[in-house]
Length: 140
Image 1 (spheres, helix red, strand yellow):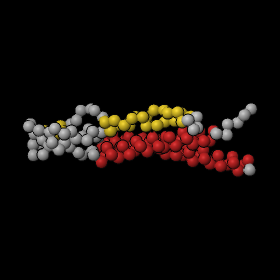
Image 2 (cartoon, one colour):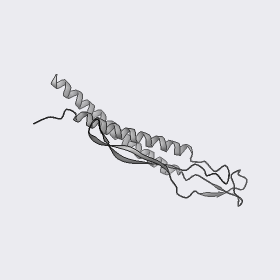
Image 3 (cartoon, helix red, strand yellow):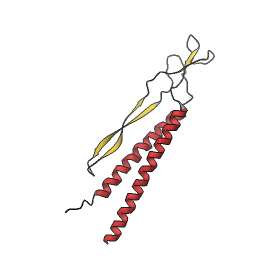
Image 4 (cartoon, rainbow, N blue to C red):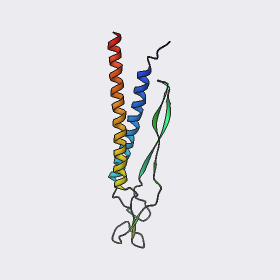
């Protein structure tokens, strides 16, 4: 019966992929939050659109495992809210301005979810690394 001594590298690669993906997600959420109150500066220019992160699995050639990765970051093409504000420089001929489609509450919930996922991957990474080191110590 053969042992796969590469199993710890595989586990660590899977957890590192999760942490990297959630880190990117947190960066995009931060960008969204920073633009939560933006508006259009002219009727012909759209305000900031919320960005969304999409994950998928990728094959890691080095370790021989599938791990999660960011597949795509794209703007949310949902409707932009309008607000009546005729004195705003970005107001159209009817006095309306386009506002961003970022909702702070949704971003905060996404941030909490991404943070929990990141921490779970980190804890699994630390536990796996600890087991790896303990195994090495037992064998030496």
